[in-house]
Structure formats: structure tokens, C-alpha cells
Image (cartoon, rainbow, N blue to C red; front, side, top):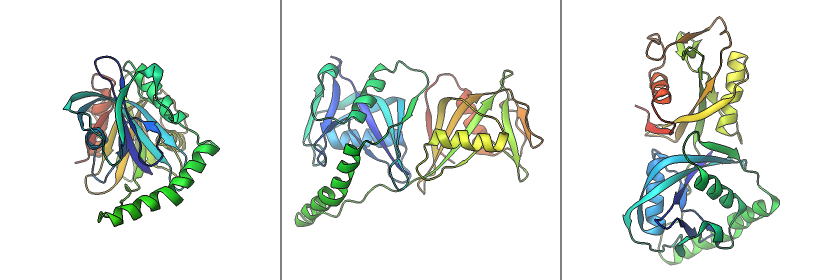
Length: 294
């Protein structure tokens, strides 16, 4: 799965920061592809600096959006950010950079970016908004045009200028797990090969992480699950692997190979990083935690 970020940066007047992309020439929030070992929170700060000249700090994750595009799909994290310094400047990737009033957004702008802006600007805290954004024919045709015409032309131009070819961001291996909490605040753990694990597993091609979490939880517990929040996102530091952790409520009787445990009272055989994910999930606040796996 390709993974990237967008940043919604608001100035003191309530205007939102947008760039004009060098490839599609459409306006969008700044952002870009996630590199191996890079946390999304670090990625958005880097991308905004490179594309706009501004130094920003991500405040909270407000949205996660999945594109069901071949071969593996693409997911975009959207952060609310605050400016901490810098001066607006254009770049090779962003020939125009400016603040705009939300009610007078520039043209052209893709509908998917308008939706992300609307959700992000209206997000007042609490659970993250996630959605699968469908790709209408016009958008699919634009993707083909970019891949077959625009990017090869841009690479030829880079060669003429003595610059290296553009290297696309890697495909990420995605896993999703579910923390199921009952009315007594106990967490459901499943026994797997002598270890206790949270329900979850690896995604299928063109499957959103929240769909992966629900599918594996149903297969492993026999229960349908309603996800309440994306509590944590964890990455490997040396390879493009990402784990999404969702919280859900449930009181179903566990199967013979499962048991409920209070947080902090899990058996020694419980996977260590998953115990950390549980602690992160029940910590005060609803913000999604981003961290490297130790």
C-alpha cells in the first residue's frame, strides 16, 4: 500500500494553506509520500517545509482516506497543523503557495481534496474520521495521464538538468489489529501458538486498514465489530511495515482460546508491543499515537 500525508495549516485569520501541484496543476493541501522508517508526523512536517517553506507541527490526526487504486491501494493521513516559523516559498513541486479563505477555494481542485479539507476544518477533536474515497472515471483518467505522459516528461526534464530520476515512495506492508474492550474495561486476547495476541492480521490488496481489522476480528472471534477510534499507528524503523490499532467495544463470550484481561494484567506470554498499544489506547485523550516499534 502506498501511504502519504496531507497537512491542514490554518493562519490567524482562518485561511488555509494550499499549494498548486506541479504534476496535475490542481490545488491541494501540502503533503507527500511516506519514506521507509518515517513516521507520518515527521513526514508531514518535512513535506510542508519542502513544498511551502513553512515550519509546522502536526497537532492531531483528523482523517485517514483510502483510495482503492491498483495494485495495492493508497492511504493518506490528514493532520491539523500549526505554523511554528518559516516564510512562504514556492518549490519545484509547488509553483504556487498561498493561504486561501475556506469559502473561496481556488480552482481547479479535486473533489477528494475538498472533502478532506471540509472534514479537517470541521474536526473539533475526538475520533478520527476515516473513509474510502471512490475514484470516478475522470480521476482514473487523470492518473493514467500522469503516469504515461506527465511523470516521464518530468523525468526527462530532470535528466536534462542533471538531476536524478524521481524515486517513488515504497509500498508498505499493512497490518491492522483490534482492541476489544468490555463493560469491565477488560481487553480481549486470543491465544495463538502459546502467545496471547490481539485480534488482527495482514491486509488484502486494495483493502482499507479498517476493513482489515473488521475482517480478521470476525474470522478470529466470530463477532462482528464496530470500530470506535484509530488509537495508534506503529512502524518498523528499518522496513516499510505499518500497524494500525483500532479500539472497539464488545461483551461477547470469548472462545476457548481467548480470555479477557485488565490492562497491565496480561499474562507474560502476551506480545510486548501489543501490551504497549493497549496502554496507548486507554491513555487520556482521543488523539492517535504514532510511534516506532522497539
